[in-house]
Image (cartoon, rainbow, N blue to C red; front, top):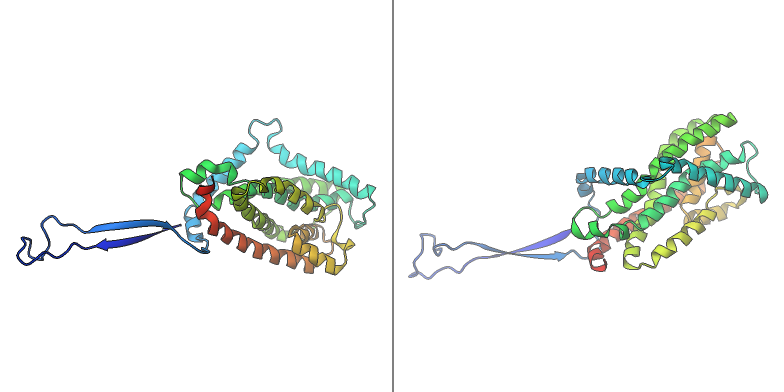
Length: 303
């Protein structure tokens, strides 16, 4: 947002003997305005009203990315299904080979796939949103729109992948004859929390990557580290309670992935780690969007 300062310059009142109209103005004299354009300073609040005003643009950007993502590919949208299935197969073998304790009430593929749904959304959304500004430099410099739309769009696209994965998971549950618990009604809330966790880190990295291009090389390592810290091919029960809280504070997906599994299958719900993950997600998301707004005025200078 750009603030403007207006200075009104009034012409000098003519002398009594100078010709003029009845109110003392010179013939043809007009008021002049001087407009100074300068960037705002300090931390700026997010203009949610402006973002709502541009909501149609956000929908268009999301639809554009969804349409272009699998264009000119052989499998097309099937990639949204193939990737979690391959990961499920790999993690199932890892869990069995390493003899990691898993609940005996459910097959390992069912337990693994439940946690892979939010993790895949987080993994791909974080990578996309962190590079959203660097990949859209022309839009950043040539036209005005809420810049937060770029990381938001890059992360929201993968909600579609998550919905497709849920359909595949429904077939997997039917294959094993497993009936979901009634708590599955909370899955939409967990989808929203996963999107917020993605943006809480992705928005921050989007600004940092534009200023320091080294971060685009750091992101893959960060995602890989967080993957092993997320209970995908293991459950949170292998950690003591105090360690679960620490891991949930470091990695927001620690509590969210386990909550997905619990909501669908009815496995034990570790409320402590979930609440810590949710609190960290909300706090980090708030900081990230305000940091983004704080540095937004400098984006064009670093392109």
